[in-house]
Image (cartoon, rainbow, N blue to C red; front, side, top):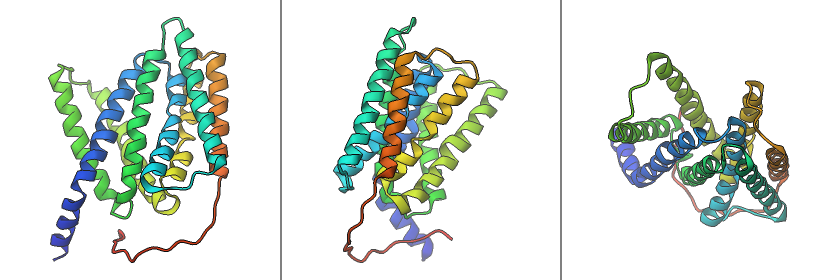
Amino acid sequence: RKVEVEARVLRSDAPRLLAVAVLGAVLGPVFLSWGLQRASGTGASLMLTLEALFTALFAWRLYGETMDRRVWGALLMLLAGGVLLILDGGLAPVGQWVGLLAVLAATVAWGMDNTLSRALAERDPAQVVLVKAVLGAAATTTLAAAVGEPLPSVPAALGLMAVGGTGYGLSLRFYLLAQREFGAARTGSVFAFAPFIGAALAFALGDHTAGWGAVLGGGLMLLGVALHLAESHAHEHEHEALSHEHAH
């Protein structure tokens, strides 16, 4: 009986799971990979902060999450920082702005992915991660075969598995658990601190290509994320009775 109920619920979530898999496990990684080949690690990492901007905007439009003046100010700071990053990439010797625009497209896909995932937050996160991983891996493998992408070496494959297991699998599991408590917009802002860690690691590993535009843009983004996290509101809610499940 329990298996039948879970199968029925899974079928009802199938369209949303498919959309989440296409956006988050296919389009997002493809845009990011393409962009990383054409932009610096520091610039690309900072550009990923815009995922919080698009997550907040989509959550506002689709779920009516609160957006006061402080949040709008934070989003404008994020947007201004992204513009400075693209301008700085355009001034780089190799013209990194195209790669940064591809990373921007990835943040749009992941922003919608995050927002749609909110409706799946009450499901077992492990189940959502598994379905999303299977659909995403099947689609990207088919795409790689279609364009004649060669198979990776064993060390590269192991490295990619480690990145996928932590950066996508474990990260998504924690993200879904956080959405239960904070909502899509606030969780996206907390998650937006990750790009700054990536930018710091890129700089530590020798990527010193970022100019003053990237430095100023990164500073604006950091202020925007901090301002968004400082937002708080309190009011009474009335909710209809809901039937949901919790993983044990």
